Image (cartoon, rainbow, N blue to C red; front, side, top):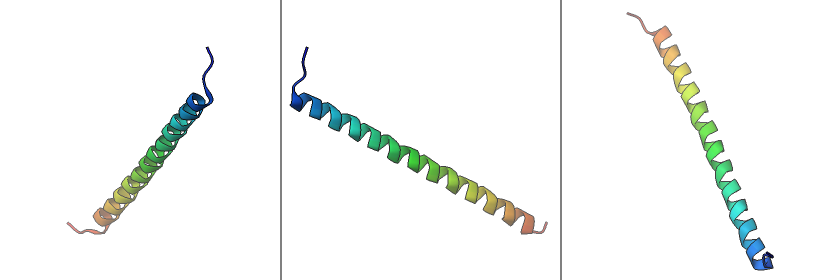
Length: 52
């Protein structure tokens, strides 16, 4: 079963789009994790500087 050139090109574009979407999602998760770490550190500093 042979695929036409147009079919191969369409498959290639779909795969490339999927990979690009995954890369953006992974990058976004990394940013979210970094923001969570920053917020946790900031909260820790606030607690250590507060007086009871």
